[in-house]
Length: 485
Ligand code: HAM
Image 1 (spheres, rainbow, N blue to C red):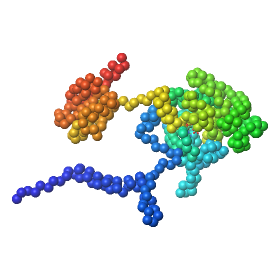
Image 2: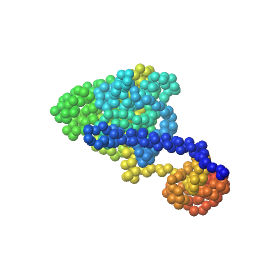
Image 3: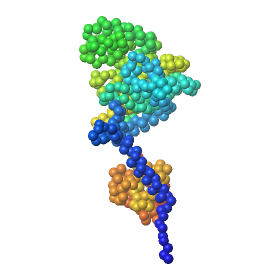
Image 4: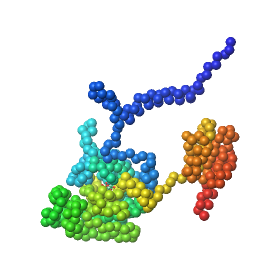
């Protein structure tokens, strides 16, 4: 009797088939629910499908944008290391009081822009609109004042402000920030400005620093009285907004862009004249350090910043050539910061001078994109050392292992498993300008060899797979030396 041969699939394949079946099920049930929703409709009406949209003021960062984000991410990390800042991360949600008390009632952020809601336990919480207050909370809570001071901290993360969305203004946006605790020396203020300037300069983007000193709380109160008195005497010349600001938030009078208010603003008392001797000396020394560092700056007596916690030095960073009158103050700023010597104590900590700044990454990205379009700067392309081309099923399996070994030896290797032909793969190798391609076919898999192709000369050599890494490393070193000559 002829023997019946029953073909069974190997166990591993069986497993794969099972998973595939399950994932098919998932595609059917879960995926459509995520993308579209069936809406119950009126009688006799066909069910409608609606597509989900982004919330207003929110945005996706797509892979094609990555090339503009990466230089900032890398430079931020590099600067933090060079200037010895330690990374800190805090939660996105915080007790709402943290911000109302530190940023202050009467400011735009607290009065109009915070995302505030109650959680299930009826706690009033909010999405952080900025991170300085959170870092101060963390500094106090975890006794970071016990660490050697000055303590230098940096962060990168999303912030949330329910603002009117427009160019450069989002409801979720990212900031990189640098904060220094425990030192009131003006050298700290200058060093922070240097970090902010280098964040852009290292990428080839020129920026302008605008700077002012708003002195102590006492200085500011006296100045406000003088400002209110002056503006009251000019009331009939003012725009409607400024008439309201006189009583509500007099410092905001200096932000007004209305043409009718300009002559009044130009003649307004300047805060610098109200500074006490210590604040004046502090400010002069900050400027001297900036001169020493050859950082140009613009003294801007109308710069007061929109958060209550600042004392003495305040500054903002703008794209160079940005016309201040184009936009309301702050809207075009790439970043801003200053001293906040009283905040730690106000929030329950010890008396601790502090200073810092934050930069808006979306604005930095759009400045970089614009810079590239205008040819002011260019992006560094990712450079690969080798491209691994494989032909056939066996070769692609072996290629996976060789790629892993190449990467493990810090050789940057590119590949494309969806292109099947050798020509197609070598075209990609050409377009990414790798100096060498590695070619692996059925024969090479069987012989444990691999072909190294010099992409410039087209010369090919067959080498032992075990030796390929050493040989490629030697070739890359040689190439590096030639390029340096
Ligand atoms: P800020 O001036 O409110 O300061 O924000 C800093 C930067 O974040 C702005 O200059 C801007 O580039 C960016 N930014 C603000 N709002 C938006 C928005 N709606 N859309 C896009 N970008 C925005 C602070 O946040 C302070 N915590 C800075 C600081 C740190 N001061 C001392 N330490």
